[in-house]
Image 1: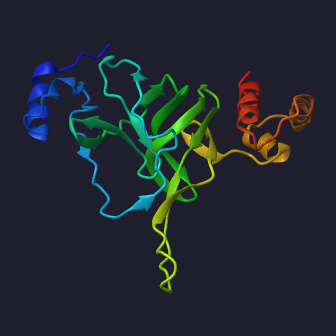
Image 2 (image 1 turned 90 degrees about the horizontal axis):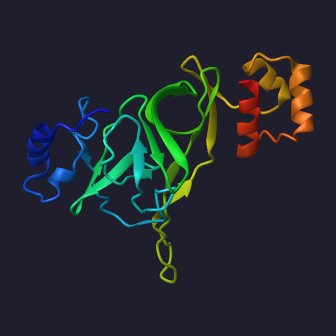
Image 3 (image 1 turned 120 degrees about the horizontal axis):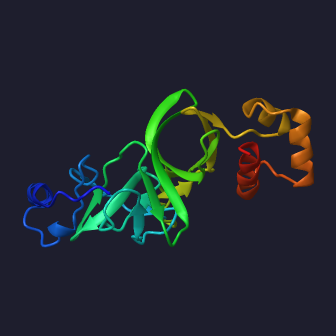
Length: 225
């Protein structure tokens, strides 16, 4: 297990967080997971709703091969950041490729990955649903910021900007390549390179719905056997 660099951690924390009494809780590892977190910029306007898909509470997490003394985290699906609090200030944890953050109470694991979708390459957090050497299944959670409306008369109030959850995106990963989860048996046969008749038999006998997450997981688990 990686050890906390206490001396370096304290020095970095002092430079980053001044004389905050909570500096000894900052986790600093050899590859700098928490060594240079970025402070979150506060919005200067009122926005309705929440950017947090799991609620705004900070939760206990486990990060494999790291000290158990990590900050409580929460996932901001609008900024695509893991946030933690130090004193009265809010910070983003560093993104480290391949890092897996397990939220125990939520029974969810987020992985920091670089992936391409719709012609764009992005580094962010995806929910890890199936972790296998052959095919893995991920889910992207995203919040959009929607514009409010201004009243055109003196009887109604202006509507604030608001957060709205985007449709979850499910991605199949193979050899570090990401593809959108197939919509039907024909697409799945091509994506997974499996005999169509064999796949049709499994889908029919298990009543697989390609739009339901539990069924997606069951299908990918079957493909990996």
